[in-house]
Length: 144
Image (cartoon, rainbow, N blue to C red; front, side, top):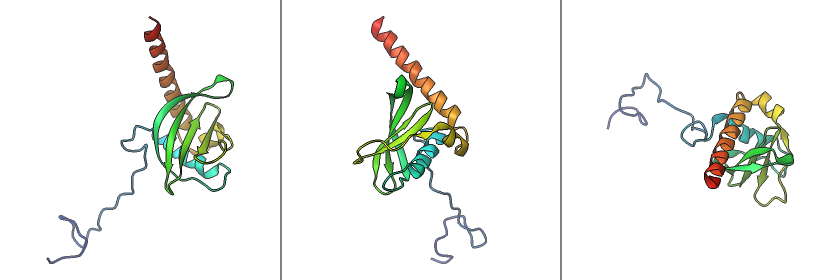
């Protein structure tokens, strides 16, 4: 009944209430590595299109094949403003395809992303290697 409004038990007027920023997907519990989550948001921001996309959540990891058969990974995404679609990560580029747009947006070179997002390249390479390993194991199980 008495005390400063908004204080939690154990807090007093001398100690400011603790504030933690909302966790981004990929940083806590989603299973998506943080560098890829950050890269997705960056790609949505820099890819030319009708408007920028602020990626909020990635889900549904799927292996995919790109130009010249390059192995990559694809995620479904949802944006902060209700936008959704797919985002593709390949060794040499990444691209975002917003639902309702005729085609994927321009390819953003990996070097450009890696210069902005720490550990992006290592994380992407490890994820693709893991996917390739799992696909190989599945193929072996199906044939032998």
